[in-house]
Image (tube, rainbow, N blue to C red):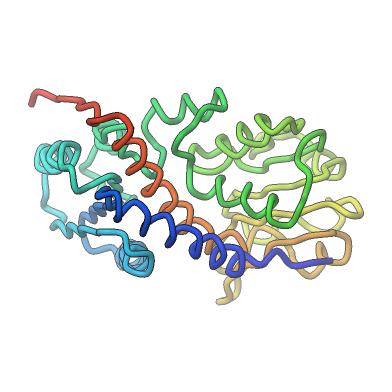
Length: 291
């Protein structure tokens, strides 16, 4: 069994991204990321800090907007519309979850698709569906990068995706399908999850259920991608029971240190790609909303 080292792969990708940022800077097209945080959720604040720190490491221009929980839907929409047309900003990210009084869907849909570096806008979701995404959802994109880095063949493989979220489960299924895998999406209503997983060459689990995937559910030589980040008995763990699965799998991502480090790296990659797209298009499309 070989560990898939997300930290190592992320560091190698970052080195290449630094070169791309420097080249864009010389061309007068410095990538810029705007990160918006509403409220005082401590976990969200850490995520925002990590994202702006990653920008600093790569030389990407960053703007951070910390808004009080009392911010209204209209005020947040106004800020997004300002950033949509701000030429220094190539990517916009609204940290989720938002306070309960917000309509998250309306907020996310207000972001200009070419600046939607989280890939939550229906325009970008649709492009992922047809295999034509310029911007890719960060965690699924990180998973594919890990598979490619370790030379793990995707085409022709039987893949099981456990979880059907819009953030990970659905998009990774589409991305694997576009790479010619045969994909089975499983979820809480799947009748026999164990039987489905036993036939899989690659299992991607993104459920948030600690140690859901156990060794008796995995065939010899399978590749296991664990997206879960859970707490069990005070310890951090994934969706996969690492102790029993590692005896049978050929490759496994650890938690932490597997998929996690790739997510922010892919966010940086999207921000750089968004700068390239905006530059080549001449000017961004502007979606206006009358309040």
